[in-house]
Amino acid sequence: MSIDVLNEVGYDIDEMELVGCAKYVMREMRVHPGADLSLRLVDEPTMEVLHVQWMELPGPTDVMSFPMDELRPGREGEPPEEGILGDIVLCPSVAERQAAEAGHAPIEEILLLTTHGLLHLLGYDHATPEEEKEMFELQRQLLLTFLAERGRHR
Image 1 (spheres, rainbow, N blue to C red):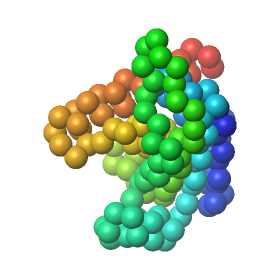
Image 2 (image 1 turned 60 degrees about the horizontal axis):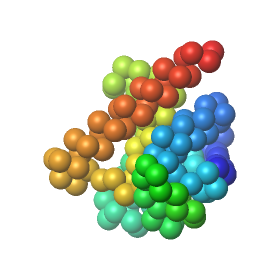
Image 3 (image 1 turned 45 degrees about the horizontal axis):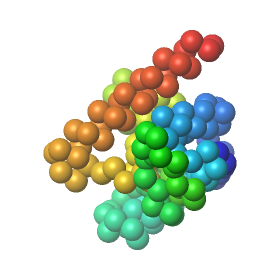
Image 4 (image 1 turned 90 degrees about the horizontal axis):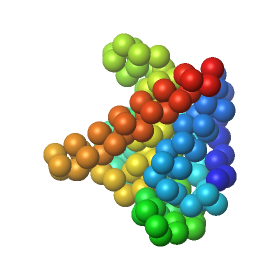
């Protein structure tokens, strides 16, 4: 797995933890081990431009996903597809505000958003109540198991 982190805002983050979370989710979702992923951390003006350009929504958002080869989660007993997973763009300043509102650490919010973005790259969505329930439950399960694993190795 090739995961690049492009920290365009110089945000103080443990990039190894960010990459570790992405690798964990990719393994759990049976993504091909050769798949490429880019994680880009940007400021609010940059995120706002992307949000308006791609979603036609005003203001900055917390995370956006840009799939490349439209890979899907691997299935038990079948080899996963090779290819480029895509890009996840994160806005740390928006994530920090959301973390404060939710009462948890900014890194936990960024890991949540990374997991959320990866699920979008793998074709999950939350446009309907059923999709939202499935995606958010999977997101919660993946993040909790990653955090539990991380805690055991510290």
